[in-house]
Image (cartoon, rainbow, N blue to C red; front, side, top):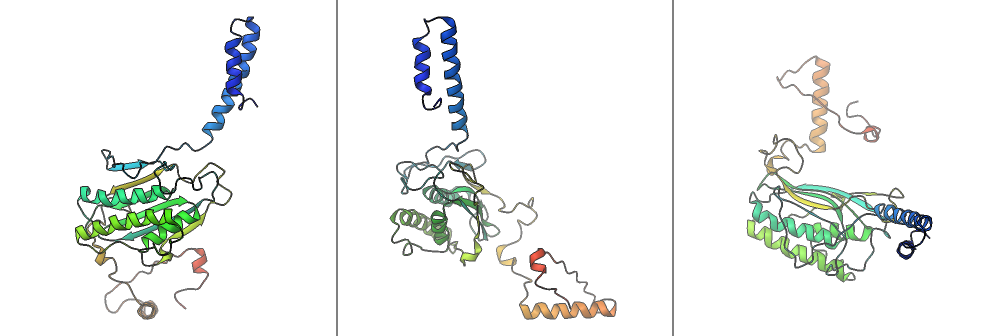
Length: 293
């Protein structure tokens, strides 16, 4: 009641300003308590600002980063849909190494299109876009409703407009991104970045850990970086095409294991090649079985 009638009690303080001192003081304290409760209630909710509209131009900071809050503006294609206060929160993690461009000004086109897509879908989180023509790609963590994240995943798997035929708002958001993305990759002469499989996106649910009016992430941050996985520049010289060098087929893997076991039994390597096997599987994966008999 103190919160709902906060304005009314404040008016009463003004009306009694000429009344005896003790009466005004009691009314002022009551109004103060109401205002304090109102401020605490307001501060406990996520503070959101409107997204830049469809016609807005991206603003650039000194470190090439643009942070966009994600409460929809009237111009958003999803205006009027569910908000963070009424939806279940989900989270996806994903990354893909793919050639882009070394030119930050050209790459800004793709960065801004990515930011706009996520904003139109009410998504929050962080996406890193690597500034490299042959060594980086995209790395992201996003949160939002199941339907909005599904639309993003379908978009990054290719043209999902047919699958979103009954969802015109999300379809428009996806179409806008795919058109800009296609133009960008044609301009730099590189095959368009799309994910091969839906399993490339790792899903999790917030469950009951997130209350009404809250979100997993405070805002949306899409930025251009030198490395999508920070190594301090150690691996920036490794080209994308070289990352698959050394992969073994299952048959080749078993042959290598047999060879390693034989070397260990014989007390050393006869061919001068020393092999160290490092098992980095987690506990559950190790329960499946061992590599060696």
